Length: 148
Image (cartoon, rainbow, N blue to C red; front, side, top):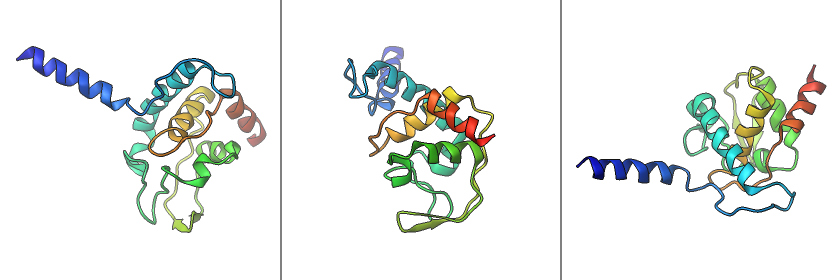
């Protein structure tokens, strides 16, 4: 019986990471897929601690309160600095995203390190239906320096 429950726990743990890239080798940007996978894994932990309660397990947010992260153009777009600033500074404005309005405040997360912010944003940009480039600690550092 212990073997069966142990096997079930192992299968459940493996399935929780099924969305992660499986291949290895360089990506288009020249970064190793393994490094991006590690960043996504670290980012998932941060997401579960800091983001889950508002943005939900499926990244769908809460209608008219908390913006969705899954499929949102602001999340997967090329302007990484914008989403980095939102994580760093939070948001108190009513915001329109893809034709819907959201009005719940988002707390700033300046307490997170550059690596943690990069990891959680890489996780968000590559989870659910999102497929976007990774965010680097250097990109976060540059935005943080401009914010001072």
